Image (cartoon, rainbow, N blue to C red; front, side):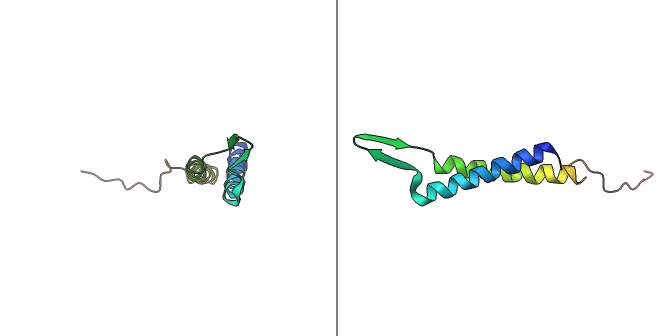
Length: 78
């Protein structure tokens, strides 16, 4: 397995964990008059979708099923 694939899977898992924390109520809180907002759920969801596509593409590439793979050639005399 390639190092890039491992990094992508690790980042994807971190974003999934972050999304779970936000959904559990850790997105924003107030201390006195101050309010802290940690992350935007839409941005995290978009990044999860992006990373899922990247992981899928990298896994296909390492398995030899990249997008430029030649399946077969039929010679024709026109």
